[in-house]
Image 1: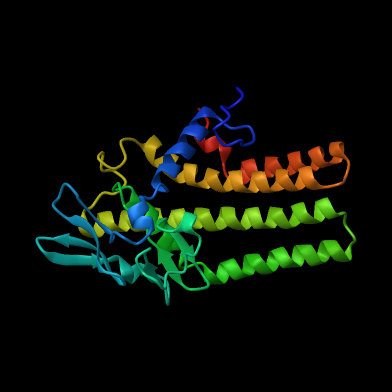
Image 2: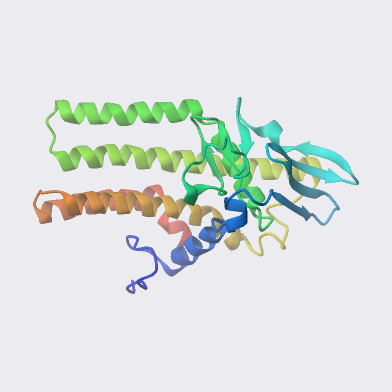
Length: 273
């Protein structure tokens, strides 16, 4: 593998296609200052070949509709897919849960406040990202189970007096397994819902060439998103390894085992090219 450019994310054993996919997914996270600061209300629409329109409109702060429409008639309201108690939120809503300015106006789910933060919808492929976030709203119970498992691993390693690095990496391992499962599950949900929309309303989110020009472009969106999480886990593990007082050779050996596991969890082979 060639040494990556200094401005590219430093990830373990990455391919060129992986770097390109990461760059594409990050484009979806670029938010205009006006939207981030709540100065512009959310508004977007895309019309499918059969005349059905995907419409996102924030008529006033706190009043958001995300629907499929045809000839002025609402065919489907995406709010009906949200998990119990969840609502939409945008930067214009003062009660929005996203306090970190860098995260405002991007697609994400806040479990504590049961809110789905809405991105800017600059391209129709953002509909698939919306379905992905909706998928996360149905994961509260399984997410709690993963959190408990991580705590159990920490307690077990402390009781066994396992060395600090192994204890931390074991907990990080459970966390990365959890995130891999939750992210894949949410993407699976998004794909199921996209196919359901195709069956019921003849809107082909996955097959419309104006949205995804190829199967590879669709794969890049999904696996590019997964890779951004892999980067976070790798950086976290490496940072801890660099700061630990344990022997360098031991740290490198343990980190390599952890990073290899991440390759498996976040599916490097899918974007091999």
